[in-house]
Image (tube, rainbow, N blue to C red; front, side, top):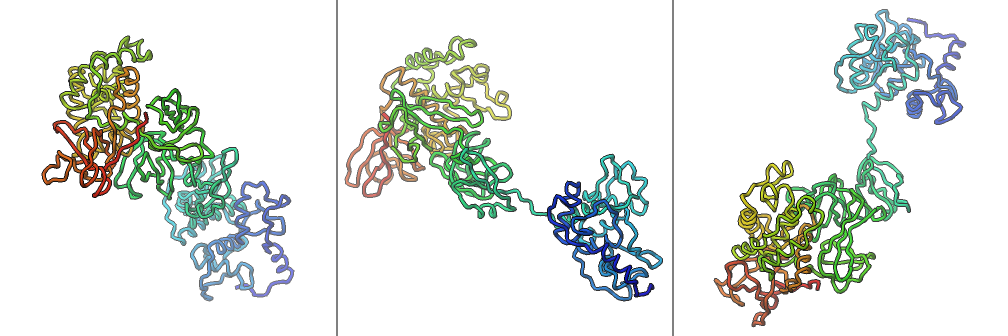
Length: 637
């Protein structure tokens, strides 16, 4: 073993060379500013793993010795293993050498080994292939799994046969990479810069840095987002909010939390009853505006019409009010109520006349409503509540209009849009069919015709023309035309739609899609489970209103409408509670009824209502001794 005595001059020189003076954090005057490995070298310097030769001098292109690399590994892995004095020394490594502990710690961890002659050769420069072997052992020491891969380096044949597996292993976890010319240059000496890169990567493989995928952003006065800080988790970001009214939480470029705004569906979106996403209330189509309540990491609490529930966060877009480009609204013109529906995808509005304007609304003023019944001004104050008659009319009632009048409406209201291909509507002459179905099965003819107009584009759709299918029966999204049912005639298609679809599914309570025999919205009525368009019922009711305006026959407002206010409300054959006089039930709160008259009885107010087909008379309890079971509603007139 070499003598423990060193010449003083040699010790001073070695101390100067390996003093590892701390390098300034960022200094334009140092020798790594702008270097390809600047980030990695500064990071290791801050951690105390790799330091400069002197202030401002990191010497990134200087070759690394075995002693230095031992020190880098020892510090990076924070090795603190017990050293056996009998095996912890080499002929050329003395206890007072600066690298004594680093060498022996690395050897004890089986990361670096000495040579058969008993020497460590601390000042020998380390090659790139030797560096790969050492890094393989370091990763193995930390339990990192690697696998052999086929190396694509052009000079892979130059890699020592004893090292090829290790080079392959570290390449599999992207610890090493070649040069731009696709060479590895295994025999080249390892530069300090390259050593910094691989050690930096090794640390990220052993302890991957947190993924800061969440951020807090300010909403500027221009309605734009300006990122403030990044965070690892949703809760960390949410807890970091300092001004929630003007800040949002983002995941990447997507807003995932806001205090207030609109929830807009990205596609077909299901509204679930809970955050377990196991059962659902209804569903909506792309671009549907929903009221925002709150948001968790995976869910958003919303309201559609009067239905409050939860949607999966990845199915919607959260848009703060400050960032809205447009929003659906209602307005009044010439006594009519217009609904202007905004499409965020197209960035444009489409307007329809949906019915009479409520008396509390003013011309030229914008109003907002979630359910189409309760209206608010732009300040968010409620201004009134009014229902659209045709949207809440029970569809087992009869229209006053005759077959001839229905045909007149079809003939005179047929849009010019379709006349180039079909000079007259294929629906002309169907008034008699719809009236016959009304008499035979109890389906309101005006409603049924309006439904057909909406679904078939006035009878001109390909399914309607080729298959006599006005209602798209059997059509599914994957292949609407191919799966649509073909009927022998329009009459056959209309009758089957009534008998097999409308009556059993939407006029009764024998299945999960029954929510009342009226058009309604996404809370009650046919619209709940018939179509994903939240305004499907409103649009069909709009055709009924259009027909009534044209025909002027007094069908609109013919009945006083009411809504049930109790579940399993008995409909009775007489206005009193007697065992055996219950004839059917209204199973859900909010079911529409057409009230014919009311009478005061000893127990309270009873309503005579239009009965479902086959019952001569029907009564429900309104309010009194038992509570409020039904109530009249204000209809726009």
